[in-house]
Image 1 (spheres, rainbow, N blue to C red):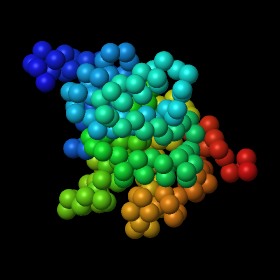
Image 2: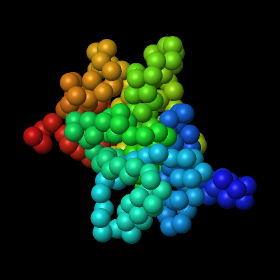
Image 3: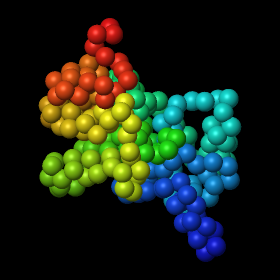
Length: 214
């Protein structure tokens, strides 16, 4: 990459708060217009993981598809909702993307602060299980949880987004020595997490679903 384009890429990255998660992943807010190809080139991205789901009638979504196709970058779509507890299939799709996507992965939602924080934390857990580093489990968990904070990620949750910071602790308690991928396939249920939160007096920290809504 020419020096001037590298310099511009560094500046534009700040605009969208592009941050390194691990050697295999980055995170950011929604990247618009002509800035996307610059950032994909600057970080040599292999996969753009869109956590907002498919929006085929939206200009930003069409731009992502077009740019990724022109750059030979895989464009994957997973739905996460910062206000709702993820369903099992939502997490299965997310972890399957982690498993199959060419790296480095760039994860993004709208603001890059809430859904992206959760996905980045889960990616760290997933990578630690698939690429053992010798680190202690408690160190891995603490590293993952550091993805869910105000600085530098601007995670300042509203009332119904406060569940996000408890999700990793729930995984630690619930996963029963299963890898993250095994956990979401074999054990994870949103009802279990809802009960975990309710048992700790944290009702109202998410918009839904609630067990009584079944």
